[in-house]
Image (cartoon, rainbow, N blue to C red; front, side):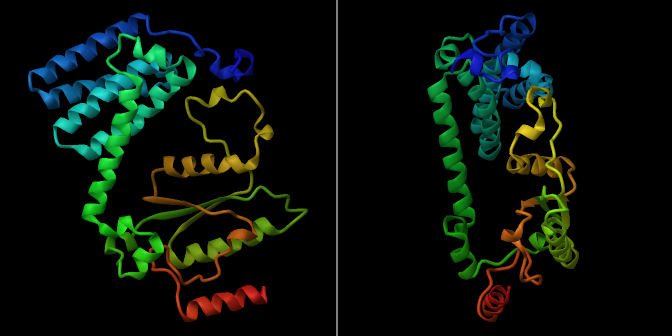
Length: 289
C-alpha cells in the first residue's frame, strides 16, 4: 500500500520506528527485570511487574502504538507466565489482547521489523501461541460443558437447561434505525415492538435514531466526516457504547428494520428454541402480515 493511500491518522506510524525513545528503553529494562523474576521462580511477582508495565502504556493508545511490538512482547511474556502458573484462561485472554498490538506493527512495519527487533517476540511463533492457546481454551470449555461442541439448536433440543443465574442476567438490546421519519415510520414501529418485548422481560432497549460514534482515545484518527461512513458500521459503535456503560452482562445487537421484528413476545433470550404450537402461531402471523 502506498503511503498516500493510508488514512492520514495512521501515517504517523507507517514504517516508522519510534521504539528508540527513552521511555521504551526503560520499558525494555523493566521487561528484563520481570524475566529475571520469573527465572528465579517468582512467577506472581513477575506477572505483577508486567501487569503494571502494560497498564502504564495501554491506557494511552497513542503512546502504546508508538512501539506496539514492545507492548506485545510484554503481554506475550505475561501469557507464558500464566501458562506456567496453570492459568490457561488468563493466558488466552492476554494473548487475545496482545494480538491487537502485534498485528498493528505487522501491518505498519512488517514481519521483519518484529523479528529483528530487540523485543523478546517473534511473529510466527507468537501467532502459533495464540492459536494454540485458544484451541486449548475451547477444549477445556467442551470438556466442562459438552453442549458447546454441538450446534446451538441441537444443544438446546437435546436437553440443555439454562442455569438459574442466566435467567437473571441483565441484558440490553441495541439497534440503530437511521431513517427519516418523514419518509417512513419504520423507526417508530420498530422501537414500539422492541420496547414492548423489553418491558415484558426486563430487558433494556436502546434504539439510536442517528448512527452513533463511540468516543475513545483513538477517535481523532477519524479523518473523514462521519456522514461519509455507511450507517451499517455504526452497529460496532452502538455495541461499544452499551458495553462501556457497564450496566449489562450481555448486549445483543438486533437490526431495527422490518427484518428483525419480534413476533413471539413471550419468548425469552434464555429460552429453548420455539417448537410445536408456537411455531405454527408464528407462521400464521407471518402469513397475515
